[in-house]
Image (cartoon, rainbow, N blue to C red):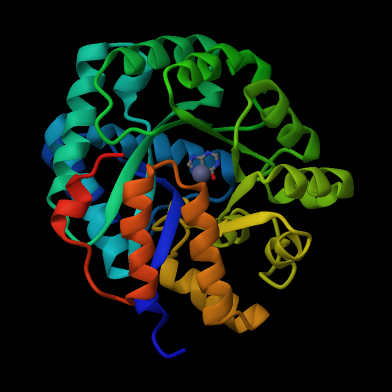
Length: 340
Ligand code: HPA
Ligand code: ZN
């Protein structure tokens, strides 16, 4: 295959704030007079050294996106970058500070801003997944979820949890997930990244999720891998993120190919691309180089991701045509609607 940038892709695991271009954050920080000391390295990228300092940098940079106008601009910038990498359908995690404040009006203003930003980008369809942040604790999750569920849905189709998997236990958030499910949202949670197989089991059993963010450390337990395959749980695998955060020394040592071979439903995403100096194109190039994957495997990834997508059947049918039709454009009408 010549140019993998052009191959149509589906991305299911991308944090909106985590995808913010460093130059945009630097400019907004200066305009707003925010103290961003230590956020950038000498090359102008984000500075961090491990998962804990990554999460701290993430929270610092998120503070420049506290008003709706900046959130709309961020959404537009992120979707344009995805479209430039051949992404034709994406689901994006939203975690603006106002989700946690439990302030329904502020949350609604931020959600509407993200919608407005998405409306400006033709060529791909997107849906949103608000996420609670595990290390902020169950009470913040509860108030944020309640506010989010009171507001209009727009492109929201799912609900999830990100943050530090080493803090609290999934059962502490079971109420939020139950309410979101009751409200008709589909469920995913980060697990099996900095926690082992027991963490993935807890997400399945205590939260009832149908997708797992990462999930790669399931490979440490053959019976769990068999369960994931048998139950058709989709893994939102982010190999570049796992390598950057030091989970594995190389892609060759990463379990992505072994999980696929064991029958797990594997999809590929970038997580927080500027933090990890990553793009969807680079992900595909590394998979091609390391495992010899080509059009057949990439088309299979597309179909698996489309099946696991939280959008409705009309959108799925429109997105499916992008694989058959190559790199043609989705009309802006297909991005704006059908909103299923
Ligand atoms: N793990 C957990 N929380 C996150 C991540 C991640 O990789 N990225 C952004 N929030
Ligand atoms: Zn993530």
